[in-house]
Image 1 (cartoon, rainbow, N blue to C red):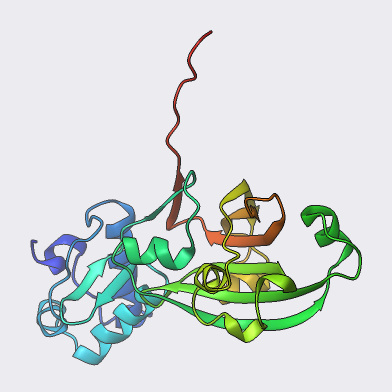
Image 2: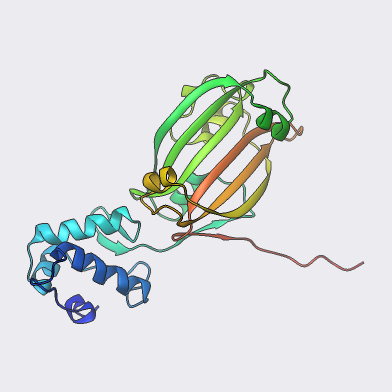
Length: 249
């Protein structure tokens, strides 16, 4: 990789914008303009500090902000890289945890809510459950390599799990352990604009474009065991599906 200072320009100490923000802006523009590509490695922080004639603290602050935005990824022992967009195969029934591990990303969750209650009218209609059916609700913020990727709101009938605490990191792993992992699902994808609350959690901006995926998961006998609504960051998440032409009769 050529010198980043030559690529995006020197920083201006007379500019009212702090140096770390100038560096962030330059790197962000280079990524958006595809001057830096997915999985490109950045030079070590000490080299960047020398190139831009700033302190390593300034470089670290600039990179920290871009990691929070999901534009950069830190890999322990390897360095800092330009994040590649995450592709989710829309035709395979896999969990977020499984998707991230398969792509070499480190998944984790921040719990917003984990509770037991009774099914709501919407959930009753969507999942075919009788009024008053006990359910567990799981609300969490999903991360990949410490970058926020999605907000997930999930409802599961109480018969599927021994308790809400049975879910630690992966819901599907807990359902599989209990013998109630879904074997098929119906999914719907649509575009949304993030609310102020959603944007704050996802480190985005209010009214940024997002993707809402609604999923209903079913057991082999047809019973619904999952109703989830997941809000994904549209700037770093792609959904793909393999389509096959049906044979003409």
